[in-house]
Image (cartoon, rainbow, N blue to C red; front, side):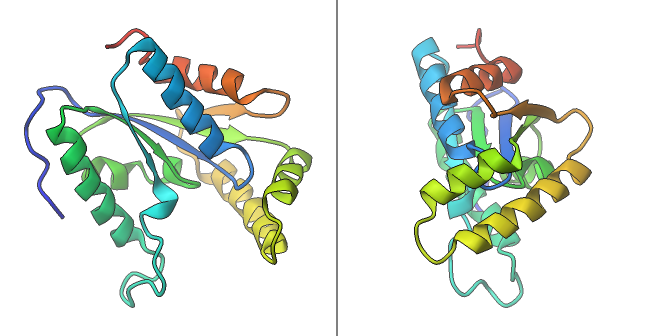
Length: 185
């Protein structure tokens, strides 16, 4: 892992966006980023799902956790060198792994966790529209298991935001408000 340069005196601010498959994490995060850009709020955005996208995973890291952390740390070195101190990090279980993200951004950070939620019917409709290949049933089952895990293990203080009946822009506006970044430039 690279060493995070001390280019800013500001403590990194991390916005974790988590939730089961099909809840709208990626769409919401892109819209959060767009709304922050429109407000002139500097930030960077990392989709955590790609940080361990390797097959096979290392034998000593079968879930890719260490690979994710190392890749996020490498990205953060570059973002921090460019002067960034706000990170939007999106991953299904991001709200369960704040320590991993804090380590990756240098060992200290202010963290806000947001767990997006949705009904089974809403998630199933989204996944059926998105997953047109052979993986639909696997995605539905993983999504159901993730919803249970996230509900049981999300730490105290995690904000829950339902995406049911909300458009992406509305959901993102709620998340931006929860971040506390709206008035920071």
